[in-house]
Structure formats: structure tokens, C-alpha cells
Image (cartoon, rainbow over all chains, first blue to last red; front, side):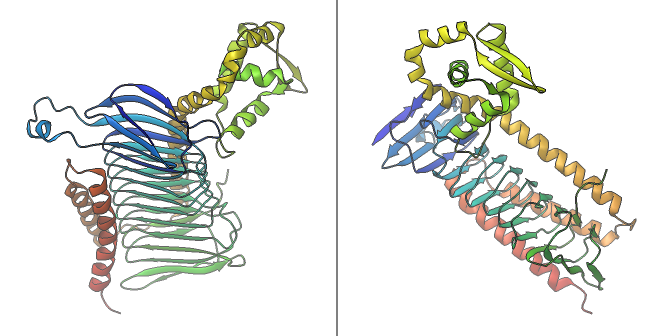
Length: 266
Length: 182
């Protein structure tokens, strides 16, 4: 077991490569990259209590603890808790990253990944394992996700580029959802739920999906003939089967508008 | 990164994209360093006379020069520590990556919004929808404010999961109930 308490800029190269990573921070930023090289931690900056780092039995944990009781009581001189860290871990390291306002970047990871933050921004790039990303107000931008994705936010914007995984589920209350799922695998399923958030989905130019879109009052637009729009007094829907209907796209909103789009036309 | 590039090139001439691919392989094949990180460094090495380039059928091939090979030999012991270099490279790349992803996300958003606008028939938004949207936005802001500033990450985690599930379920229930029957 190895333990560190870090209160200033420092780089550590770990003797043992972790198979599990857990990070708990309040503010600042954390980046985690999957790498075949040695596992390293670069601490760029620490303010407030020292960053606690522990590596035992393949489990790497980072946390910036609450300040000691006395300094919490005396607000004068309490420095804001904040760390800026960059980690390189094996691509198949499972990771759980939690912050209050720190932004999070995860790239090149290929196993279970969970990222949660209240107001931080989440950035995902080339992640291959199942991913869960949640925020209250932070935005989520994900590119090159090839595993299943679950994204949730209250008011943050969810943007998904080049998604090539199988299942994706995106939920928000008022956050706008934009997703390019044209490269999702055959038989894939995409489900989006919002209350007032607008939903923009780009499907393949010749999609193969069962489509079901429902909303209380949201406007619906589709680039694909073959979808029937029905407007009732209390709700409206847009349904149909595109291509061989092997995949599934389901969108529910209360007042959020929904647009199903194809490739850009020049 | 300089020594690593020299070491890669000492194995033979390579195109820029091959170099980027080899670097990408070091990152589990999932992530590739951007051309913006690699090419400027190659050009710098060229200016220092450690690397030379030539064009072949419109593509540029890089190779290590005598001077470059000499530098590599001189730092032979550091070559062993190159593995550590990779860690540092990952670190340099992350800042660039973050802004790259958000920039292309912004582009996607404006592209799809424009497409939707072009497709949309001009239907005025009914006043009911507008009022509803405003209520929901207020609701969302309230939920955001409910998490106190001093919350620890694990408390925030639990509060967050509960907040999102409850918010969406509650709203959908409420509005389904209020929906005029017909």
C-alpha cells in the first residue's frame, strides 16, 4: 500500500498500475487518460487541504478532504478547496469520478466509467466501456463513445458526437440534448427524455429504426418521410418504421421540441 | 516528446500520420494525439537539424539525421526513461483535447439547430407552451440551487441521483395528469 498527502505541484509515477480509480473532489479540474505507459499522477495545483492519494491492491483513490474542523469554524483564512490533477491509467481501469464543481475529462478509457458532478463540465473522448455521466447544471460533451452511454442532467446541455455504441439514454429536465447517432451499431437503441429541453438527433442518411416520439406540447420536425405526426388535444406524437426498423429511437418530452435530422445537405 | 519522436524515426522513415498512429497506439488505441501537437514539434526538430523531411507523391516523409542520431545516442540513458515522457505527453494533450471536443460539440449543435430551423414549418409557439417552458426552467434552477455550496462529493452524488430521477418522474406525472382528456 502506498499513500501520499500532496499540497503543492508534484508528479508521481506509480509502481503498480491501478485497475480501479476513485476520485472525489470539490473544485478545480481532473483529467484521466487511458495509457499503455506507466500510470502517473500530475498534481498541477492544490489549494485548501492536501490531496490524499492512496494506492492499494490495484485500487487508486484520490480525495480532497473537508478542511479540519477548526478552520471550517473560522471562515477567515479558509482557502477554497481546489485541485488540478491529471492522471494516466491503463485503458481498462474502471473509474468513478465525483466532483462538486470541478470539471472532468476522461479519454481513452475502455471499461466501466462513472462521472458525477453538480456544476462541473464533463468531457468524454474515445471511451469504449459503459459510461454513466450525470450533472445538475454542468454541460456534458462526449465524442467517440463506442460503449453504452447514460447521460443525465437537470439543466446542463448534453452533446454527443460520433456515437458508435449500442445503447444510449439521455435524460434532462431543461437541458438541450444534441446527439449524432448515425454511427450507432445495428439494432441499437436511443432513448431521450426531457421536460422542456429541446432534442436534436442526427440519424444515418438511410436509417433503420423504429421511431416513437411523444410530447405534450413540443414541436416535432423530421427529415424522414415515413413518420406520421398525430396531434391530439393533449399530446402529439410522431411514429413510424424507417428502413428495416432494426434499431429503436424513442423520445419523450413535455414541451421540448424534437427534431430528427439526417446528414447535412450542402 | 522530442526524444520519443527521434527514437520513433530512428527505426526508419515515416509519414506524419504514421507517427501520430504509433503514438495513438501507446494510448490503448482509443485516443490519438492531435496533429496540432505533433507537427509543430517535428518542424522544430527539423529547424534544429535533427530531423529531415522529403516529399513523395504529395506526402511528407520524416527521417532522423546524423545529428539527430547522435543526440539520440548521447541521451541513450534517457531513452529508458522515455516511458515517463509518455505520461507527460498525455498531460499536455488533455488541455487541448478538452477545448477540441467542446468546439466540435458547439459546431454540431449549431449545425443541427440550423437544419431543424430549415425543416421546421412556421408554426407559432402556443402561449401555453411558452409558459410551461418558463415554469420548467424555473423548476430546474430551483433544483440546482438546492444543493448547498458546502456539500461533499459523496453527499452531492446521492442528492444528484435523487434530484434528477425525482424531477423527471414528477414532471411527467404532473403534466400527464393535467393533460385535458380527449
